[in-house]
Image (cartoon, rainbow, N blue to C red; front, side):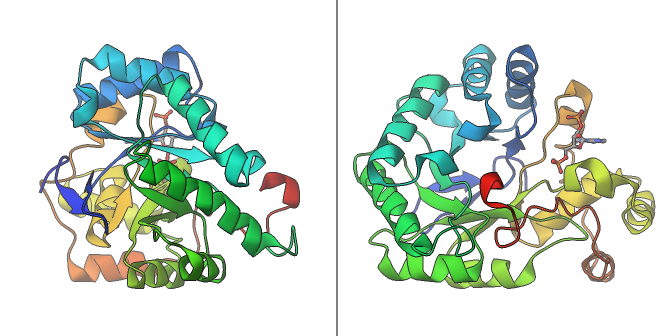
Length: 285
Ligand code: A2P
């Protein structure tokens, strides 16, 4: 196994099994360098979002790396202010412009519209999805999916979808793995991606994670990334620190035992971001 191995999405598109995260990577030189260093370190899968405010820098980092666009799997996400068919099409065009590319490999609905916010939440999600289907058919995006959807939001979307979502990107790390959402998504043929596989860095101090890391002569970050891989969740570790970006790729020279996986599975809630579709205030969605 290595960084460029792939899973096959339900439409046949290949997606590298580890991606590089850019949430909270500041726009400008920092995000640009992080993406360039990631590609130089061997990553071939980059994850960004309109809401991260760094798409231009991500695009610049890709061009600076010299790696061919067709050799990179690039994901971006649609933001909540662009819900609905027409706005979705326009939002994707804007992302393409900022990224400086003419197609996106994977386009995700960043957050679902939920019952707490609007009574017609399901219709709103569906009208956004109709825009995604159009973008997919037009070849602007090679695959489409969602992020942060629970079963209750996914089920009606899948029921009405003409093109089924191929990915659900959720918060996933030791101490917070959302097993019900992951199981449901997989049952629907989706790949589960893990955002904040290091729990935004907070899981790296956990004693269980560190004891396991020590037993292998690896770091806590390696254990977290490896944990996601062995759970078949596609990790998207983020860093803006060149040495960490490279070091986080060194996860293919060891494996966690079943007993270690069980200990990580059994961890009490740790490093949870607090972002939960149903609980979040309306203006955060
Ligand atoms: P930085 O970007 O300053 O290097 P997640 O991917 O779970 O969201 O976690 C990202 C956070 O973890 C960032 O604060 C990042 O810091 C930090 N981080 C990433 N890799 C490592 C590492 N190998 N060791 C320590 N901290 C790391």
